[in-house]
Image 1: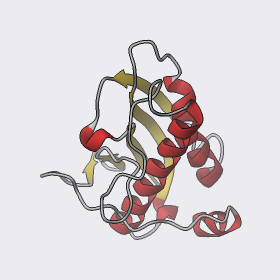
Image 2: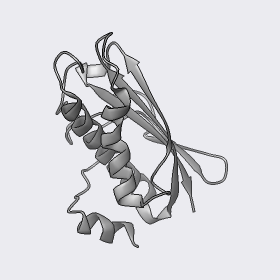
Image 3: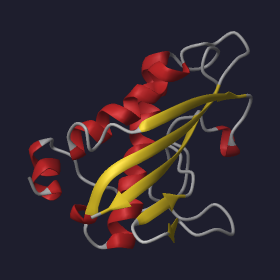
Image 4: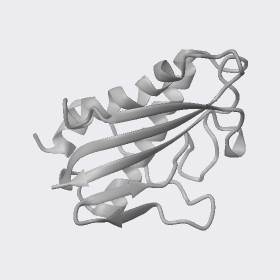
Length: 155
């Protein structure tokens, strides 16, 4: 199925890509058919954080999962702008998620499920089900609760 038809069916509108927060490229091609995305957070089109805080203190698992979903929507917006067509994507190879949390918060995978579920909804299974790491950290830029990177294989 065409990715844009699937997005429409899921009632998902891609956001414009957020502005870079530093001196980096939003995506980097390597090899013949691989793309690595820079880390993206749950921001609006101006780059302002929509979700802020630390999981286990300021935010619930559900709010963290919503933040991870928004970050992934932003990644899809970046990919759409950079590739010109999301249908060029063959599979999501690897997902790396950083979760800002307290020392006694252990639900990083549940937070990252908000991102992974969106990828599976958009690209299908197994294409949208990546290998994944969900890493705890004490802080992220701008006090965002999650930052996500993807490794993608093109058709």
